[in-house]
Length: 219
Image (cartoon, rainbow, N blue to C red; front, side):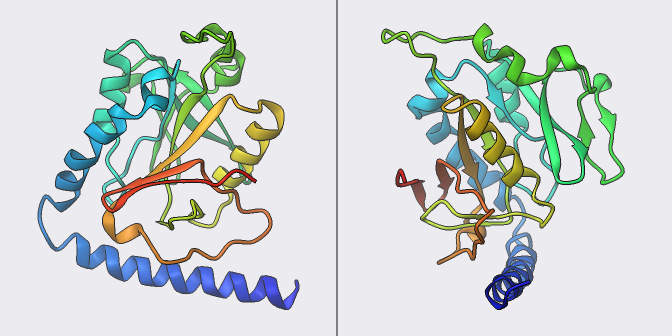
């Protein structure tokens, strides 16, 4: 392992430690998470990417994450198909279409709920089923609500260290270019001045936090 890689790894861990402390402070104020979610939800729904998206990929949030329950409800209520993530191997995951029934979800040892591993519901097999309304004949991308521990204004993100989303973003951009719009949503304490990244870390397309909407500069 190179010295530069060691340095980035150390900086990432230091940032995770700072985020943990900031999170503990953030949650000392009751209802603060819900208040920020209430502020951001209308902004999400006004985004053209959301309005034009044929479907939504989203995670089931845990108590210390940006809440996604209403996002899932609104997406399904507006007729957009919803897909949830399932870990399928070391550093690997896929999204599967979800019927909206909690009883259809399966518990994972990490503590989250996952959709069944049904090859027929693998979301990339359905990208062309819901093309959206495009006068140019080009389908609009599905929106993938992307979690993280920390984000910055350049659309870099820090995950929990498993690499699941980095690998997924890389794979989808390679195999299905333009099919997904990766949108990170976070709480105010998660926006940092700069997130350290390595060559394998993937930028999201946009980051929406209470401080504003930040979009990635195309390479």
